[in-house]
Length: 263
Image (tube, rainbow, N blue to C red):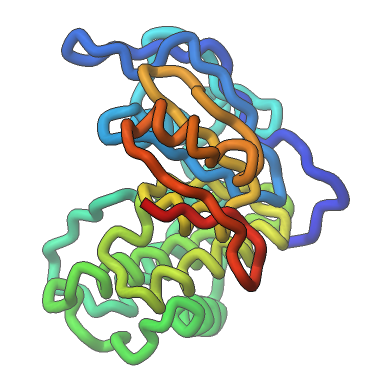
């Protein structure tokens, strides 16, 4: 990927509407996602964060509204073409076949034009980056939940290895099954992708992790954006109490200066 000189709109969503089982999940919802930054989607359980991600990537259709990638309507993209630019790590990945971990990561090369040597090189690199190279010959079903999550992250990074300056990375609760070190390593990799020009969208529940790694916080509730800004703008005690119904104190991190929430 090449570094972009200035943030540009990569994803544009306009007037999204979706109701499921009588509940309004998205209510005339509009958002732009920029290249070169991490956008954290935040909000209470059931706020519509994962649903928004599924609409943005085309997994589900909204009742109304439009989504465009790089100024092209999402429906005008061939799926094989889009797969070279859009990588998605869902909350849960169902895979029960007895593939080795390396074979699972190699699934990310399916939309790419690579030689066998190039596949080996890229998958080795992404497995090193996600700290799973030592699992290469393990059978995937034997892994723990956190190990599986990291294997799929390596697969997604492999898939985006040829995205160049048109790269979108969507992560839905990528740290939910990870230990402390791997939570930070995963989000550091997301930072690296953004620094190279990718548009990165992450659904998170840990507000302190979001504040540490994301440049933009988008807090959703009742199908609408309730706060949208930098960590210091969005993560105020008043906003947190209004959204989550919980009192917090917010302090600057003693080393890095980002807002740190204490209950």
